[in-house]
Length: 130
Image (cartoon, rainbow, N blue to C red; front, side):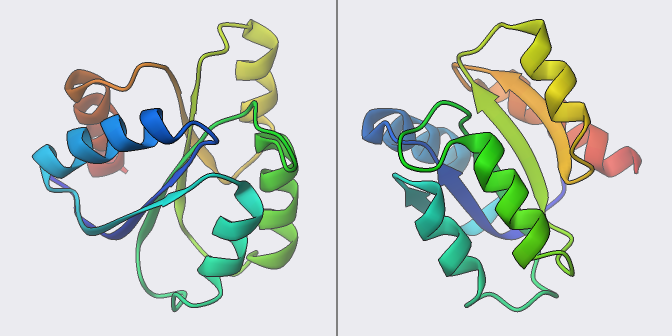
C-alpha cells in the first residue's frame, strides 16, 4: 500500500479528527498524522514541510473562518509547486459539491463522512494505479 510522510486532517470537529486519526493509524499510511481545526493553520504548517515530502490531506468543506473551497483556492495560490494528495472528506451529499471538487486539479478524491477502512483502501488503490 502507498505510504505518505504526513497526513493532515483538516476538520473543525475535534471528535471527527480523533476518530479519523485512530482509523488512519490502523492502516499505517504515514508516520505522522496531524490534526487541524481550521484550514489556515494547515496552510501555514505546509510551509514547514519540504515540497519533496508526500502529504495526504483530508479536507472538510464546511468549516468556519476558512471553508474547504477557500482552503483549496489559497493552497493553489501559495503551494502551487507542491504535489500533495487532497481528498475532500465531507458530510455533504450535494452533487454540486462533487462537481465543484472536480474543478480543482489538486483534489484527487471526494469521500463522504464517515471515513471507513474500506473508503481509505479504495482511495489508496486509486493512487497505486496512477
